Amino acid sequence: MENFEVVVDESYNGIRIDKYLAEILPDFSRSRIQQLIEEGYVEVNDLETKSNYKVKTGDIISAEWPEDEELEVEAEEMDLDILYEDSDVIVINKPKGMVVHPGAGNTKHTLVNGLLAHCKDLSGINGVLRPGIVHRIDKDTSGCLVVAKNDLAHQNLSEQLSSKTMRRTYLALVHGVLSHNVGTIEAPIGRDKNDRQKMTVTSIGSRPAVTHFKVIQRYEKMTLVECQLETGRTHQIRVHFQYIGYPIVGDPKYSIKNTMDTEGQCLHAYKIEFRHPRTNELMQFSAEMPDVFKKVLEELE
Image (cartoon, rainbow, N blue to C red; front, side):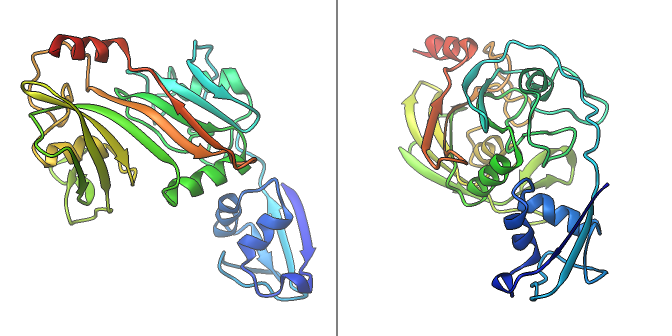
């Protein structure tokens, strides 16, 4: 444990304690500080506090920062398709079939395992199983993923995600011929009460979800669409297109039986756009469509 104590200067009088500590402790993100406060590691005048407490001049803030939990996920050497990397972020083109982060009982062969071998220095905000992971894409979805290499980058990227300034664009092949050239699917998504492994459009225990789309190419019985995520719910694109009657081709959970060899769902995160967390420079990256997806489209031409 690392001890810390500070007396609040009058220039900070009246601001939230989580914001105050984030300003005077640049190595700690605001979300990390909120977590420490919630877990009781921070006291004001020898009393536990809350993140929304507004500090007063002369307050004595003390804390014992716990040591970082030892990582339980092993690093694995992998041939990663790196689109960009610097000291703050790394952008990966994740292959179809790779899980992003470990889960209970499954701590090997994930993207995180490969990142740990490559980077050595990922943000710890999301804990030992998801270091550096700001957002994720499904196992059988390929494409662009940005990963934070430190807490400052993680906090900034997470804020861009929540404020909808990070733009994530997908290509999806769906069953059926869409009549509209552009559209928006706005339908709340929650856990399917009949199958806990699936998500569904529901008003019960759900969260708002918005997907924008435009038609790229129409085929005899299918349509290639470009999708823009406004929110990032689990399986969002897959659930939304099933909901409107145009399920993703090859989707084993939400689609009709497919006769084509697609090796899973035809869904690719082909572009990502965000502001660099340190320089504020606009960054744009795109990932080439996987060969199996290209082959399916060639067969449809």
